[in-house]
Image (cartoon, rainbow, N blue to C red):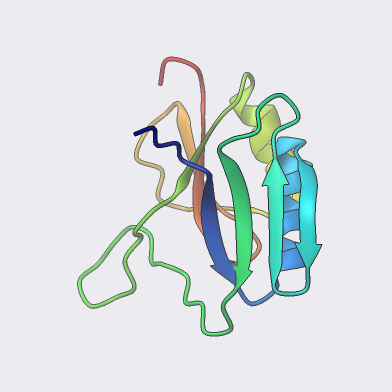
Length: 124
């Protein structure tokens, strides 16, 4: 038996808009686009991909975590070569930089719909 991770799926009230953010951030291609479902794939690799599904009641997690609040159950780690430049580029695409930054060579950010992701340097 062979298993492969096919994709990571993010719930969002607007799948096309969030997919457009990650398409621009990652440089990936849209392979399926509907109002309630969008799939992105890397031009170099078929899998894993990044998909977005309609979730009208999405509640963004709290960062840093605190008891009684929506906890972060997963986040994306995105390796970059220039942390400062890619942080600024992500911000111009609509991401926000979190105030709490636990590591010097990692930037915790939020996408336009509140999902957390980290930009990090090789070796971090």
